[in-house]
Amino acid sequence: MAKGSGKKQSKIANEVYEAELFRLQAELVKVQLWARDTGARVVVVFEGRDAAGKGGTIKRIAEYLSPRVVRIAALPTPTEREKGQWYYQRYVAQLPTAGEIVLFDRSWYNRAGVEKVMGYCTPQEYHRFMRQTPIFEQMLIEDGILLRKYWFSVSDKEQLKRFRSRLDDPVRQWKLSPMDLESISRWEDYSKAKDEMMVHTDTAQSPWFVVESDVKKHARLNMISHLLSTIPYTDVPREKVVLPDRPASSTGYERPPRALSTYVPDHVAQLRGDPEKNL
Image (cartoon, rainbow, N blue to C red):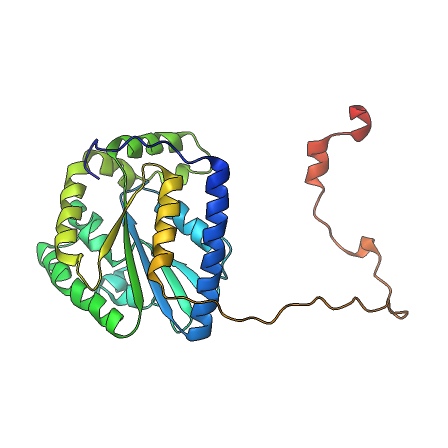
């Protein structure tokens, strides 16, 4: 989204959002079962500016899914050894095997964004990336991987608002890094890098899908709904689960005394206070 061009939207009602999100999450469970049953391999790439809402969307996608089937790949800064490898090598190691889905919270496109803007790669490495990436992705697709790429687009005004909200938030301060702060002053540099990336890597075989994310809840519903529409999943028949009757109590078992076990302290009791004082 261009600087300052965020569109004012009326927000969806919370009860409508929660109901639709749960419906979509139920469909994602079907996708998981379908992938495991058919051996499908799915890769979903999440890219976009800092604070654009990628992490929140990934969290909602994975919320009810098995980590044995759905993995989140969020790679740290490459080690010295990884810097000496073929650029795509550490990302290839994260690709799914049969019956797996991998969600890339940032991906090989780091080279087209932060590495380009911050000067972490040479011009030669950058131009090689732009030339090789469509070929690399075509190889993945030809091998049967379902590749989906999403760019989360946030306005400068909304991004700054989200950064400010993190300043004094004890559970989200870790999300505000020096790199985030640098991105504020380099807004146009990142815009140019994103535009050039799209020119070279938005192909017919591996297109980019842009998610407007100034309203996080809208972005989540729109992205998940679109993802589901692009995957040819079907319902997988499952045997009905019937809970067995609990067997009769055994006459030979006695539970050990509670004093022999170490229990966690009752922290909740401190929060409740003395029940007698509350009467």
